[in-house]
Length: 137
Image (cartoon, rainbow, N blue to C red; front, side, top):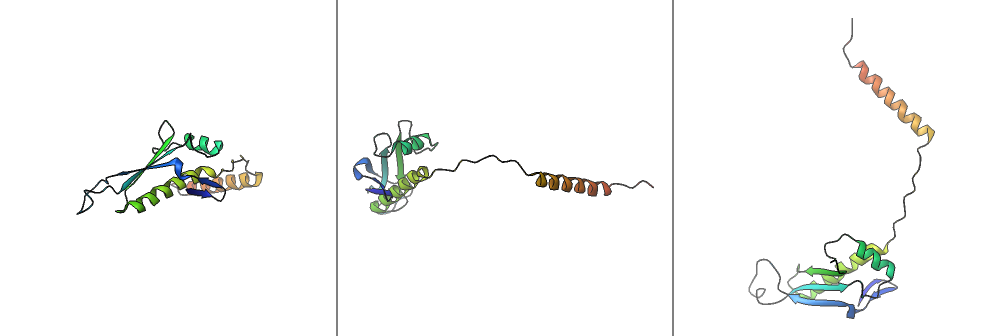
């Protein structure tokens, strides 16, 4: 079970784990144990609300396949349980990123006073640069 928010919970049956061997240099035990984890989560078949599903599928993320399956590989730790928790946290962060709605920006016009101040500073700067030139005696 993965709790995204107080009223949004993903059941454990929708998340699939697969143990794999971790990449990188090994040790005494690491070469023969499968401690890395592949997490698979099918967005389309999940119990998420439709709005969240659409936002997740619209994300341009390399972890989401064209079929709508999230694949997260966790191999940071040398213990399988820590890698499972890490993968679950990363899935939760991905889903939380689409739950927040961004307030749309409203275009505004600059005030007349700010336009006048801007133009005055530009002319003042231009006059200052003009004074730096060579003088004609």
